[in-house]
Length: 282
Ligand SMILES: [Zn+2]
Image (cartoon, rainbow, N blue to C red):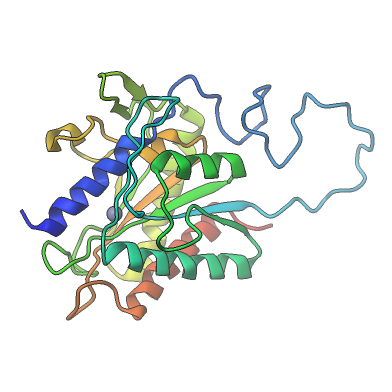
């Protein structure tokens, strides 16, 4: 097994290991329920009665989109809320390339008028998986997207050759803590949106990249089979209270290890088109 392949699988595992939002957590963004934790951009309805029925505030604030560039300087961490391992590690050239893609996506979305939040502000910023999910939850984002690829001289996959996958959140997906406690994804509202968005991402990426894109509601295998925390969902997705689309792609452009600028733009273009369709700006 090549190092790159090993790294990729570890990466997957690490991601999966981190975030599970157990049933304890209140549900997501949408209709601000009575829960306090997620204070949306719109004041909770428990607040004082409306004063001006039909007057002002027609211009809703632009949607918040969270962009999650994969990987980090190595960090070892456990999520105190769930007990899940939420460590992450550096993986090159993937980390560098997907950060560049994330910056392209950010620029285009901002030009569209979206409010954009990055889970990492700098390429080398340490970030564990729970922190990434927490950033999206706190931002009351309409949608989050992770960006990954499979790059490297050994075990890397050509950008046009495979590993083009879009993962969504599905009820029943889980990760397991070191003590064997399962943290299960239970939010059916978010799961439904996530699945709908995943199909849109696949369509938009297929159009931009010109290759088939697979849609999956879980990782497709038990991550425990690789000696990591058991389960079948990426940790950031599990810990998220919002729809979170996790993107994988081939990572080597023709004749090189890592992505060319042209392929970074292609990857970004598909992601931007997907966001524009999932969460249109009115
Ligand atoms: Zn990765």
